[in-house]
Image 1 (tube, rainbow, N blue to C red):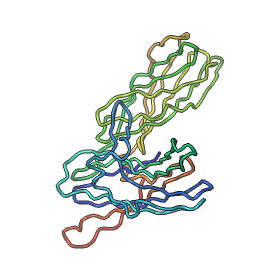
Image 2 (cartoon, helix red, strand yellow):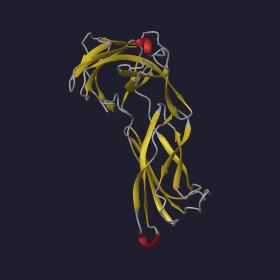
Image 3 (cartoon, one colour):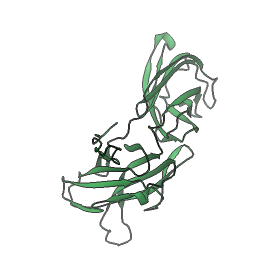
Image 4 (cartoon, one colour):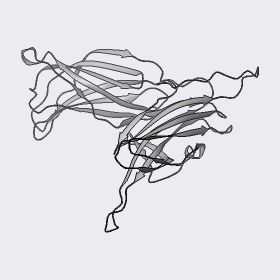
Length: 293
């Protein structure tokens, strides 16, 4: 899933173009609508159905319903209008594209397929707040049946919410062996100041080590890496904390927005952004800002 990420002053309008692709062999009626979301327990959580919040009241769509032929596409423009009196802070939401299947013969089961674009909107004066995070403790473990894993503690040290992805690679193992990269689990979202864990699950046949591990995590354009020496324990146990060898940083403040392509149940949504800002004091209109991130 891709995102709309932006920092806007009160009174600003942002326009997004959604490209909806029907990748099924049947014509589809697609409902497009905003809905609420929150950050809870290191997860981005969607509200039930069409649950509303302050951000959803700022979002309007020029075509809330579109008919899309098999293999066809439709475009919908979403406009986010921030009220002049909007208070400072970050808001969360999602713009859904939803298709409902025809009911079965018994008339009791209806399937609803949705794809969506997350919205992270920060409101306040000045430039965009910094996005950053740090990687802390690394802890190897093995499950009861022997599956190894590595857990990394992460803290959001910036002023924007972050979504973490990344990988781990093992080198300098027994007889000079190497393994990976292995992807970390998805779905870890941290608010400013929040802490959480990302977990990489590894093949069961992996020997205990010792190993040199490199953990590479990123959120948008912000990237952080750490390497350490670890030793996996026996099944059903948690190993000792990894001994950190080095930390590497490479990143920038998160850009103004992300265009996204989402795939689910044969549907896809592509976003493209245009910004309209208030005129500067000279009366000269500001330049249109292209899609970012």
